[in-house]
Image (cartoon, rainbow, N blue to C red; front, side, top):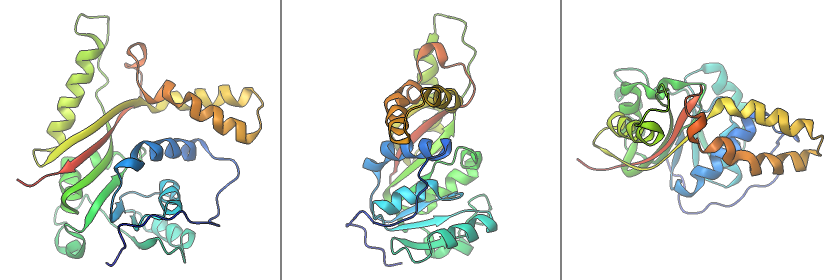
Length: 244
């Protein structure tokens, strides 16, 4: 593994669809949030069809991508064939108990690990989180989406602030004492489709639709009190691995 970790040059000429899908727009928003936290050798776990991977590649990060599904790995291999920033495509399953033996070459080797595929909640499993952290070097960044508690909210005196504090405490407990939480942001994925329908009804050109999307992202990107008991609530978590 000889990735160059200090230079991130934008790459030209990669194929991207003219009209972004809902999922691609969502990943674009996520990428803008996490980009300042990215550093060094990056591993993406659960790359799926490569929506976020494409954005990382555009910025020239030294990137390894992975997915537990063999067909997804084949798709990723074809999609990024010949792209210098992609240092490897791996069929990686962080859910196996005896994880270290078959992945010895990856243990402690990465500066950033990303798992933000909200359709795959396996990273929330305690075993998977432990295995993911094994791939990071000391002070490596862990960037994950975690589902959060959907608390019953009936205008009690505890309210939204208590719900948010409770979830942050739960997230810290799930990540363990060997991780320092740097940032959490709550949002509702279920709000995205309705927002896109509203924008589409305005009959704007594609470029203007993308602009309106990003203007409206904060409306679902940051959960407000009246909406926090809806479905599809997640926390974007940026944490740092620390020595014990």
